[in-house]
View (cartoon, helix red, strand yellow):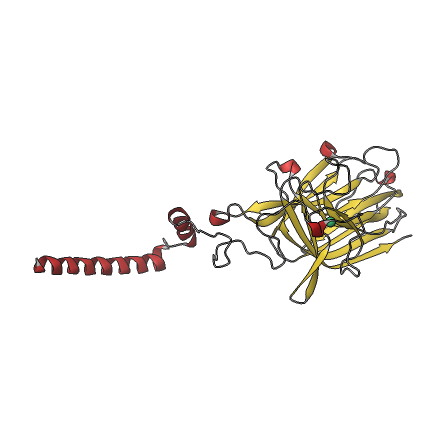
Length: 319
Ligand code: CA
């Protein structure tokens, strides 16, 4: 019996030695113990009881000023009598507030010495327009420029995207972070038509982050004709940004002479996102009568959207 016990101990020791040498070999050489392998293994055999916990190093990072977890569509502190009644006295962000959400009013956060404007909206929270008509939004509108040659409006800012709308259908999902608008001659479309909109779509993580928005694809939604909406627009992928990444943004909308024909003009909407230029000429330049810019958070057909803006400036040149 004693011999059997010592034999068993010996076998156990040998197994342990073999295991240690094998695992150190694979770790250094064969790389069987990659992070992917470990994440997959843990999530299957030992599910994290609290996936939102900060102690979980694999969880998508939460921003300091992010609303997390479940929420109610409207909140008492989100009620505003009119679209402009509940702005802060001296907001850091430029432009006139257009608050059409009962989820929140405009507020600010300061992170690492930089103050951010907070634009949070939820599906079905438009408390300013007739029910089931227009989408919720919290945006700021900027002064309008005329369409003489050389006139333009320009907006600069830094954004962070924390969350955007998703109802499972691409064409209905996503949240606009900024847009160019402008009226035109000859009729057609909305009385206050959008021209080019910058729309953020969610990119989800993998494994324990499969239900978390970890990055965002930014698309340009551009009219194909004046007043175009729905199929009268094209949606073009521009670039991907990470969740909570500080991204520089410039948008310039204006009119210049057509270099190929001095009797014609070009109505342009040019953006620079994170240093990358996305220039675009608006169709039917001669019909345009305005250039204007709005930014913030607009459209949420499912869930909640959270956009942050800082270092905002606006320039208007009128000829
Ligand atoms: Ca509000």
